Length: 461
Image (cartoon, rainbow, N blue to C red):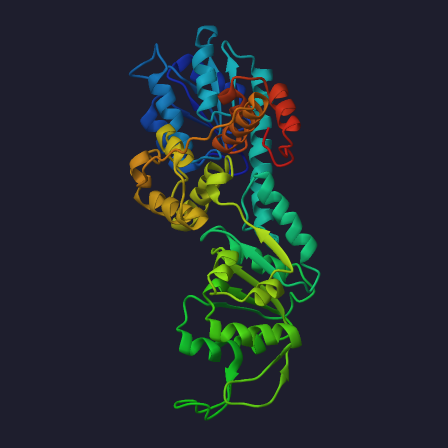
């Protein structure tokens, strides 16, 4: 009843403390807030669910373990599972420094020594409220901003970042672009980015998958047909290339294009005119061609299954996309991204990954690349039962691949880089957490990031 009658203009501050004397002192010290008090885990979680306080202060020594930190740390994890954006400040005695650091590693915002100084603790609480408000405003602002054409690419891999810059350079031209990469690496995302970043972005983006359409229908899909061209052709129908006039045409899995159509596509690329099936009229079409394949086209040329002259027409600009297994740290980074995305879609709390789950994500080879990752994490978000996403929720088997190099400096630099990006990905770009995982100070971590060219502009303090 007391909480319900609080002033609507005040912010909610939850204090988790089992000592009645300290409860009273904290309530009196911070009466500018709507102070909610909990003495145990159950009442603390009830307040979190009902009032959603932005800031929480807590003592780790809670019943039934008032002299230890087991119950407090468990409560902390459950609070952050229910409300990941909550700023949680741990109040600890001198002897509890180790547990306070452990709490930071689990996601606590800060810790403050007991006996507390009301003025100093007040500043910490005020800053926590300010940061929470700022993060909420930034999130709302980002939701209002239009997506960048390359926003579908989540990476910190230098190779893929360079590819994104190349896409930006190539997009304004009319050059034909060939995207090479395994299934699920994001070839269509990059093709759409090429279109959206080009002067043609106001026109149509049309796509066709050569492997998904039977050979006897593919010609009509590409070039269209005239009325009466064959049985059932009751009206004139435009093909995908003609429909994309003025825009971009994406030819996916071009390696599966039948030989009978390769010569017709080559003629179009050379002369920029088409003829509909059953027609004789030459129709000029102004369209930008982007193609993609997971196959080795040079091997197909040697086997006589792909025209060499067509290959050179299609490959004015070639962009090779690395598989997810070769992008150090990106698996965990993507896992966090998809977990947050699908948790919001499903209307459930964004649960943290367990240590075993993170190990599995990092060790798995991801043969289906980003598409497989997306499906895996969506399933895990839906199936997770508890306060964390566990190894068994992923349904994956750990697979490791040994790599060997005899250059000591190269091995050391590569290992250091991989550990840095994995730690940042595991900490979800929180510098304090990443430094704690690596066992270094924040200045040292910034120096290492600078030396390895890791962008720190979007990293959280």
